[in-house]
Image (tube, rainbow over all chains, first blue to last red; front, side, top):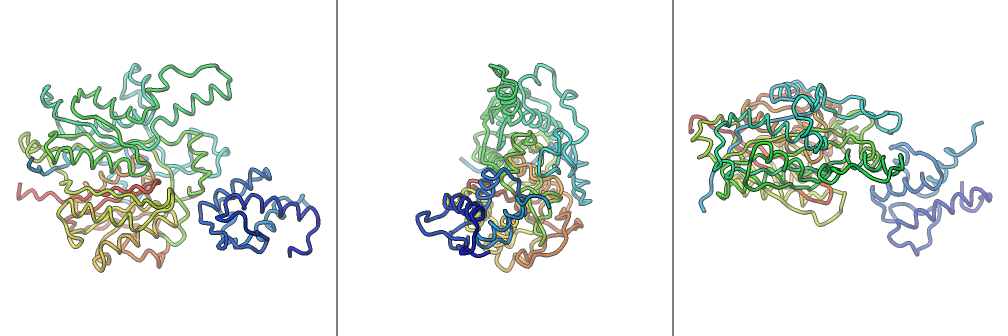
Length: 89
Length: 410
């Protein structure tokens, strides 16, 4: 998924995720996009745990302990959430 | 004031791998863990199911109803282990003067967690307008220390230390210094923790540091801690006091070092841990080459075990490759404010028996933790001196240094 080809529900999901992440960012005033990496945001493992909690709370879902391991940028989080929240086929 | 040597003369323990010194030591030597699905809470209500819970234990066999009414489980564990330690030390002749020359220093991270939970259930789930009138004395973190003093009639200094996972080591170190400086002749020291109440477990679950299956300290595939309950109590005495009554001596407690990371509340810091180890060695008059065994903090989280390895290399340099290092949390679990006490019991028995308990559940070496971790099999070894590490959330580090007791020089 690229940030320029989003449908409205996808865009809304991305905006909600970015709003959550902005709360923990070292410089929340900076431009945060789907391509922004957690390294750029200065996230440590505790920030990741707090972000996961906030996402669970926001979307009413539960994420396994290993859920976001290896995730590098915000776009990957949005992609994972789309899969988790997709209606069963 | 002249400095007294301080010796360990009694041990008491309650843990997932044994409720007395012998069964605890046997389990450690066999590399047997005490991990099992939690029995007291619906496991479907938690993301992790495995804990280190004390088995075959009913506090009503040890304590009167009237005592139980005043005590959260953490205080019950403290008192029962303390009685066992005093019995093990074979101290009988309690005079008023001796009671006044003994102290009690106990650690606990969370105090009466189950009592807090019970009160909240009454208020918020059952919508009761009140909680039990003994909630406050049950919850207070000094309840363990106070009940020990009351039950045994100890009238000297008595207090509690709460420094999360370093609580017991801080408590043991405080008692040690009180004796060494001549303030008291003996002390009942250690820690107790009863963290397996639902609300507290949910808090640990939220932190995402608990393993879903097994605690594998220093292994490449380690994935977190296993929470444990328990109590460890040591009887410390000045050498003069111990000799005067012909006490059996397990080991000498020779040094205590503390430091604060002053960095991050949760992330450990190798500099802070290293400074605490150096302080303990300095306090004991030891050099790094004197140490043969380290009972590691070794929680089984990625970051702790990596940071601890770095800190050990900082302190011990090339001698680090000669050290035997094990984490007994791989068997008794992480008992938080009691952890250092369980581990001090393990170290005292290790020095006495010339055997190093293993790092159990070890699967695959992590190149970042390139030390001799005594994987899975206990090892017979000529251990002269040993260090026991505790590093806590809040960046608080407490390290104890023990020396083998040479009976021939007694």
